[in-house]
Length: 258
Image (cartoon, rainbow, N blue to C red; front, side):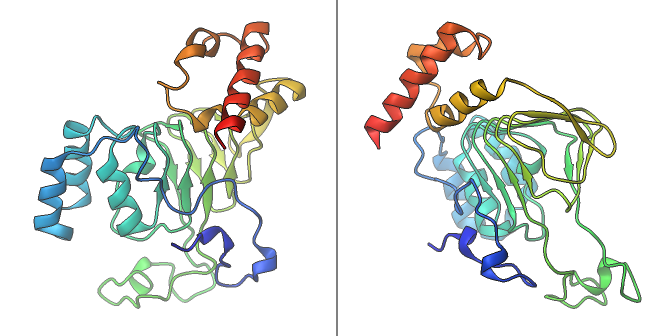
């Protein structure tokens, strides 16, 4: 399968496409995901007649919810081009009726149910209405405003209630926190806390050395079961000596497994 991180969007060359942290497609073989035989059978029989709303409802009932649903991730990828890692949950995992091929969500991401990622309407055309570019009554499929929006939500990010993410933001960093009601118009760095409208970074969660240790550990690549030996350390402040030792041990395990 093609890694979409290597592809240029309309209006930009390959050289202008910045490297991205997240894989192009979701890892549907992740053992953390739960797959319901009933939902697989139902989806096979009905196909797209089984609406995104019903997939979302049944995934919550039969596959343990957003964080662990195999089918929800499969449908999001195949119908809308959205990639979601394991243990992530929230508003942006709801299957919509239009493509969102620029959206990729990492692992362990917490998205409030009221968080929203917005698209721009064209302001240089006769009409701003989506009727003329989304296939409505007078629509023209494929005549979308360019370039299409793109967003990476990094591993373990937390996006609060009533947050609006505009197309001006292309990356919410690993471990970043977006406060409730924020309007995010630009990228948010790893482990930054951003609040307000427009959102601004008020501080970082950790000192720079601790941030580096966290990034080097790549702890989010492991499942909660694999992290069980360090469960107590995971609940301590990241600057705590026990937590730092745990990060070193986790990094060593990941390097050994690679």
